[in-house]
Image (cartoon, rainbow, N blue to C red; front, side, top):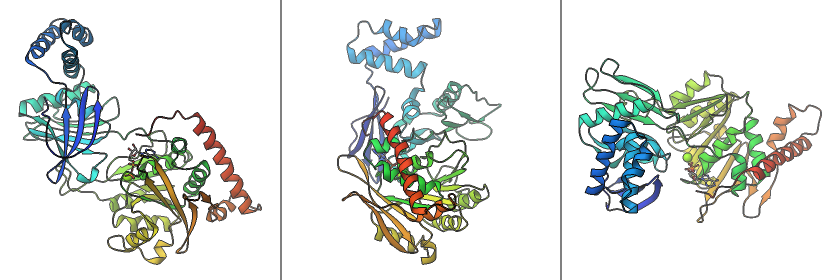
Length: 442
Ligand SMILES: Nc1ncnc2c1ncn2[C@@H]1O[C@H](COP(=O)(O)OP(=O)(O)O)[C@@H](O)[C@H]1O
Ligand SMILES: [Mg+2]
């Protein structure tokens, strides 16, 4: 069972079933603290007896929980039920890690703490948890358990297994012996359920007109940058725009950490970088730039980069220059800073390359937790025109798109077509937004 009561500032805290998870400052990193219901000696004995009965008779864990908790206090009964289900139906000591959707990957490669990458803090890379796997035997047992719960098996004869869980998480397991000194397990979790553009409208992040314009821009293969600070909702907005794209588009997404989820789009090809810091990947890192080059060979309609940080921007602009649509998020808070970042080391865009970017969208997280688009700029060969200002709510149609639309509607007035097209899309989005069930912003 996990230890609690560690020191250090708590950044966030949430429930996973009856367990509490805290992300805590710990030396120069973070600690993922799992706090499961406490087991006292009395409950421990009952738990053992219930488990024995399960082995003997196969009685349903729920029924056992009821039967053995008759004389217990409420929190004791909760603990008994928690551990019965965790052991008999769940993933034992790895249970919370398997259920927590804010984890991207977790891993155990030898006895010691379970380590993980958290969606709220991916730049900390592999952080430790307070859940410690004590021995090689315990690790063997957990690797077997997770793989068996997904319908697979791992044996000395077949010691390297990759399998998908029923929720599409990818489990890679190794059983120690011939191929490795220790058993190991790495679980890459499927990205969380994405927000739709309609839902973002409902949440007040952008108006249906602005959403319609951005939708059209991405669909017309514009080159778009979504800018903001950490947690401002950049990736979420990018995901929602990509989800709007027609089904005959091929969308290649390139990320270091799996966040974008276009599972419902038939043309989605996700590529993930292999980081040099991942266990066992020191010599075999696959950087974003290499994936971008590979992406071009797949003839994508749109290439989206999860978060541009360095030279990969060069490859993205190359893709843009040969007619692919591109979209990326960028960590920056103003147009000046964005341009400075793009044109200095390590991105190093020249003026003629910068001119290929069509739109810069700025998004912020308000103190009350709402996310809002504050500004949108349209780039005319290096001159940035503000077409949306969140303060006044003033919005001008993205004129550049008129030229692009003109190809499809020959003979009509481009400005008029643009107005109609954006109005039509805004109507569609408004109807969808009305139908959206609003869940309070997380
Ligand atoms: N438009 C939004 N409205 C409310 N909450 C949002 C919105 N966009 C994102 N969030 C919340 O913020 C978290 C971080 O969003 P994300 O898009 O990953 O930010 P960024 O990419 O800017 O770091 C998400 O997990 C989600 O819970
Ligand atoms: Mg992001």
